[in-house]
Length: 305
Length: 327
Image (cartoon, rainbow over all chains, first blue to last red; front, side):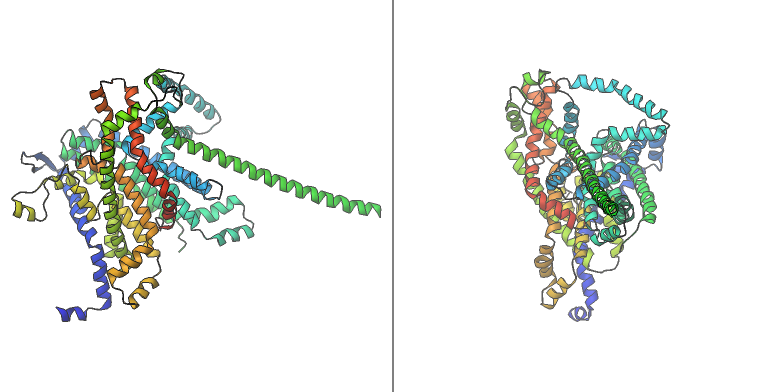
């Protein structure tokens, strides 16, 4: 044994040490993630009954759960499409909003630290109960606490206002879908602001890693601020757009209604097989979206190094 | 003669005028930009801070204030009654200490394990490294919700390769204790561990190799190098990960619900039931009044995180910027 150890080359030794460093995580990954994913697939293909002893028995039913989820279940398809629709609407908005804010915050001005601290606050206060209470408080801020309900009723009937503006812009010849999208963006502005804390910080970091000499060159060559943005800043932060999109998609997926539905199906209706189908399908779709979007952007990304 | 002089004078005046004008225009432009930035920043800060201010102010409202439509933001008759009841039913001091200990211990494990794994990935070559790192990325991308059922089952009948069954005769049920969370974190699979491993990996990759070579030449062993040299250098990202994991763990209700961890350990879980508790025990039925108690409770729960954040926010944000979350 000893002799064998001595014969080990330095690189082999180093690779063994490296492996030992990673080992605890690897055990955990296989134990909790790989095994769980396998079990999820297994559950989704079978009818699971919990036996009184705490264990469970699986009865293979093939694709029945999948067929039920997509053909017969009352709300799953609808919840899934709305969740994904919301995600697709939010991702570009959040990405561009956070890039814009990062550029704004990257300048030096008085009170910058304070402003950055405030922008990051939603990330810190992301507990479920706090978020719910904040939503309620946001509605109440527009009027006194006690006229909140009256205010809400008014807001609901105030949909007239939006219709009016839509008509107005429509008359100007702006396509209706674009107006709807922008109106939606305005309506969910507080959601977008609250969801973009981490993204803003990532973009700020990206902006600071752009070498200053590039801006000097651009300035000497006579580029305007607008040109500098599109020719220097944007290509340089492009790789981080992917990071941000991945973060945003995963974040919005974990908070979506699909997950809620899967949780409810498992723990209040005890329909474990169906719940696994819900989780697996929505995860698969999310991953598919990620792969498509990232592949699309990756092709157009410029890598400096 | 005179005409030439006057022409030159005119030209000078013109240039002077043009210069002045340009300076004025650029000053004005700067001012407009400044104003634009100010409006946007103040507006967005308000959107973020507004609800927080609303929660704080309404937690001081008395019953009369909340029924009075004239009262807005500033209570006429401020009361601490909301805080009294909220802290009583939250069992504030006790649960707060417990949840802080819970979150802090998990944070320590996270920083320790994730930095180790990140270091292993960043500095060593071993067969299958790329595939394994892809697994880390998978861990980040796949939401935990996908695997919640199997996790639940795993810990309901917990066993390590049949060893526990051999000793005790049956597998143990670890649910409704915090043990599952500790086990998962210990094996690098805790709350958002993938992200932390990624952060550490990026940071260690950015450190110069010469540091370790010097340590190696000076005769430092692997562990010594790692603990006394690399970890010290990784302080900015360690701070980032520490705050992230502390705060997120403290706020987490997903795992707490999944593993049925008692709400006297996880105060964020307890806060979600406080209105129901107060409503049944104090016979208060008006939801608007109950909301005031919830607001007070939320302020109480928020206090420690906000304190941590305010104390460390500079290191934190700088850490995020420098720690290579970006790569």
